[in-house]
Image 1 (tube, protein in one colour):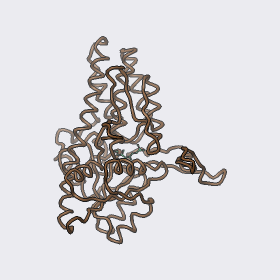
Image 2 (cartoon, helix red, strand yellow; image 1 turned 45 degrees about the horizontal axis):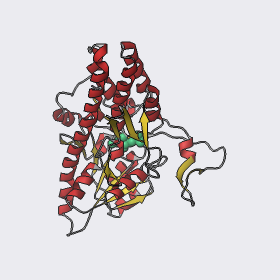
Image 3 (cartoon, rainbow, N blue to C red; image 1 turned 90 degrees about the vertical axis):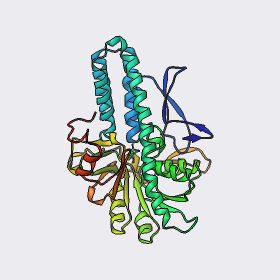
Image 4 (cartoon, helix red, strand yellow; image 1 turned 45 degrees about the vertical axis):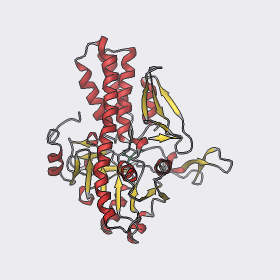
Amino acid sequence: MKVNGIHYRSIWYDHELSKVKIIDQRWLPHDFKIAELETLQSFATAIRDMWVRGAPLIGATAAYGIAVALRTDASNHSLKLAYDTLIETRPTAINLRWSLDRMQKELAEVPEGQRPVVALEAAHRIADEDVEINKNIGEFGLKIIKKLAESKKQGEPVRLLTHCNAGWPATVDWGTATSPMYHAHNENIPIHVWVDETRPRNQGGMTAWELQSHGISNTYITDNAGGHLMQKGLVDMVIVGTDRTTAQGDVCNKIGTYLKALAAYDNKVPFYVALPSPTIDWRINDGLKDIPIEERPEKEVTHILGRDAKKDIAEIQVTSEGVSGGNPAFDVTPNRLVTGLITERGISEASKIALAEMFPEKAGATNND
Ligand code: MRU
């Protein structure tokens, strides 16, 4: 997607410099900065400390991390070290494991001398496939928006609500939940997006920024406003991303998603999840029992980053001294609250049978590659 008229992916390979570059998301939406990742440790830090974030982008970054690690040492020991280092960075998004397992499998039989080249090509493929998957999700999501638009008066927008940032910065490009929005906008279907701020890290600020950059009408709202808006009939559809969805369609996503799903259910608002297939964990069914929920530092809750009156980026404390913060980063929405899963192959019911029908080659898998 474009920033100041220039097309960017959130991660890319600079062929001239032979370097992996990322948009450093610690500063979004306040500042647009690019960073270079040159060592295995820098990749691990970038994922753990959320310079990059969002399940699909975490997966693509890990793949490039393996490729860069193998440049200096292409041995089995080095491959294992890179895998073990990267898998430890964040526990919830399954794309991390999916990507590492795939890299490991593709490289296992490759002679050491060829590994750096093969690994880089494999990482490029993962990144390119992500773009393609998200584009397809957008096309299927567009059908739902088009249907909703049919019941509107001429020029009246379809009103969507989204939580967190499942936008292009969270993927390699397009985003998952935002992709149907971009497709609708490109087809001149009027939409308006309610953007949850998504405390504590305010990923909604990124969503509002990217939608605004593309001329899509949106309103940034507090996390608690969604239920009220739904009761007032101001939301036609909820669409969110996911960090891990189980084989039976339980959806783990950014903390607060579950409350949106409950409010949507109570108000008969359709609740859709944009789901790329690498985000499905085929090994597990019960999301509440089997998905590890990341606990992040309490400082993310007690402090907040923004621009001060002088327009400088500043961190301020929002609690009194000594108050302790709790910071579970994700929650699980049971499949019964999900209207549909928008995948790259089509829209699936959130059930084991329907997902297995959509991805027959994956159903019953005991690993993620
Ligand atoms: O903690 P984050 O910012 O990595 O969490 C991101 C989310 O929860 C997204 O909704 C999810 O990864 C889907 S991104 C296409």
